[in-house]
Length: 129
Image (cartoon, rainbow, N blue to C red; front, top):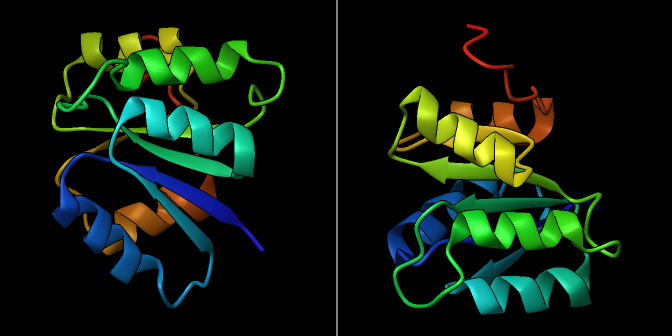
């Protein structure tokens, strides 16, 4: 069974993801802060982390969490999808430089979410359309 850790400080996003993925049946874990996300990733070792780029309630932010997960030998193989309303090339490049495997622009629908999770299309190279 696929395990997905959803890291977002907005309840609405966590709830949307939960409802959208209910039929697909993955095990879902939720975190509101970067610290909680790091703890759960080490303890539960999810297959995928859906990670908001900006976490308001505590450092570390989403990019720092991504960096820390990718630097840790115990979590470096986790597939990380950054979620963000920021869609400029610089934002996507920052996510890629932090080690993100993919980028999901907010707002997103169910089909986009399912494609990112189950299709695993990689982040495009610099400006590679």
